[in-house]
Image 1 (spheres, chains in turn cyan, yellow):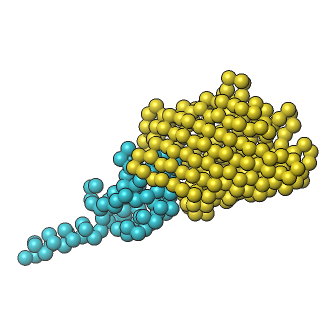
Image 2 (tube, chains in turn cyan, yellow; image 1 turned 180 degrees about the vertical axis):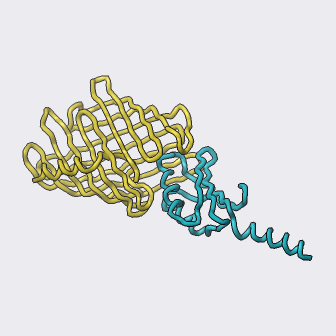
Image 3 (tube, one colour; image 1 turned 120 degrees about the vertical axis):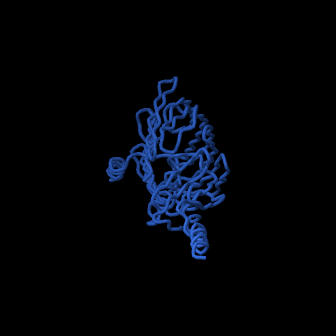
Length: 94
Length: 208
């Protein structure tokens, strides 16, 4: 019973507290212009690392201590950088 | 006094051009230099739609310079963010001073520019009008086409081949066609070019 409870708890935590957030961004064609995305997210305490993949048009946010960042905050940062969010996905290794 | 202000502005800002509005709270410092004109800008993007700042220009004609200094407001009027491309329409306006044939007086400018780019293709067109009562009413039109032979990653050096056509009646070589190279690495862009008529171009832009 304790084992099942532990498994459930771990499963739920992976949904609630992402350590990797994959954001698909439209319009990201210029590496110089996309520097603004990196600059914006570096100001957020929860962000440990940020990777910008221009080939696949994605921004990967690694968070500290499995902290989450709300979709609204991510969308705001991307919009203020001049781009549009296409999708946001969470997962440990995504 | 006007020349002193202009000179101070040129000395204390690196020259600037292009990227009229960037990300919110971003600063663009740019310098656009050709044999017949110089264009320096310092712009602060108040939002992702509006940027305000200063612009200093010099047009050289028969060794007689026309100097202009403007307080500028740039507006991103439209942006298309596609999966593999981006297109923009910007509006420009400015009010300031001109120094033309040893006479200083008020001046203003307005204009628009549009561009479309992918990671390997670029098309751009801009038209500005510079006006000073009883002195000049000068259009400047510029078009660019460019391509990049390869796509670079986010932290790598990106290279472009471009050709710029410019029409500026107040400058020497009223019409110029300048093949050029554009490079950018992280937040720094630089361009260099030379025309068949002996003209040259050297540009620098930094985002902060």
